[in-house]
Image (tube, rainbow, N blue to C red; front, side, top):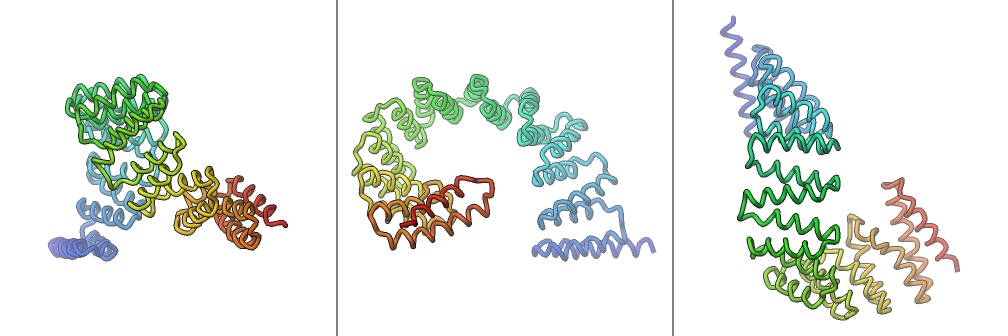
Length: 376
C-alpha cells in the first residue's frame, strides 16, 4: 500500500510538472495537490504549488504553501526568501524586512537576504536602519556595488548630500572605469546649486566615459543654469550629433532658445522633437507656452487640441491645463460657439479627473472657472 501511494504521488507530480511546461498553472496546482494526498510531506510539491500561485498572483496562497514547506524544512533559505519577496510584492515592506532578517539570523553570510532586507527597510521608510543594513553588507563584501549605490540613494533621499557624495566617491575609487558615480555626484551638486562642482564631476564622467550622451546633456543643463547659453548650445549640439533620435535633447535645445527669447528657434526645435516622437507630449506643452508668449493664439489652440485629444493618460494635458486654456483662448478670440462647445468638453474632462483624484480641489476650481467663462 505504501509503495502504491508513492507511485500515485509520483504520477500526479509528473503530470503537474508537464502542465507547468505549457503554462497550465491552475491545472498543475490541482495535480500537485493530488500528489500531496498520497505524500503530504513532499517539500518539492509544496514549493511547486507555492510557485504556481505566485505566477497566478495569488500571493496569500503562495505564502501559505511556502509556510507549509518550512514546517518540513524550517531553515530552507529559498522558501524563506520567497515569502519575503511575496510580502514585498504585497507592499508589506516591514514584514518583508523581518522575513529577510530571519534568513540573515540563520546565515549571516547570505548577502542577497541582507540586501533585500535593506531594500525592504528603505521602502518602509526606515531609512537609517536601511543604511545600517547596507553598511553591514559592505563590511561583509566591500565590492558589493548595489549596496553602495543603495546606501547613497537613501542618503540622497534624506538630504544627507555630503554623505551620499562620499559613498559615490567610494564607488569611483573601487571602479575606476565607472562614470556613473561621477554623474550622480554632479546631479547632487547641480540640484543644490553648486554649479562649478557639478561641472567638475560631469567632466570626470566624460573623461571616463566619453560616449555617455547624458554627460553632454547634463553639462549643457548645468551651463544653462549658470546662464552660459552659448557654451550650453555647443554641448547640446554635441549631444544631438551623438544621439539624434532622442526628443528630450531637442526639447532641451528648444528650452535654451526660449530662455534667450529666440522664440522661432525654440518652436523649431520643439517641432524637431515632435517629428522624432509624436507622443513626446512635453514638447507640445513648451511649444504651446511659447506660442502664447508670442500671441500666436490659433497655433496655440491647435497645439493644445492635439495634446488634449492624444494624451490618453491625461497626465500632460491636465498638467498643462490644456482644456481650460482652450476655453480661455476661444473666449479671448471672441469665438463664443467654441467657448460653449469646448467648455462642455472641458467640464466633462475635469469631472472624470475629479472622480479619480477626489482630493484634488484644483480641478473643482477649474470647473467653476470654466462655467464662469461660459456665461455671456
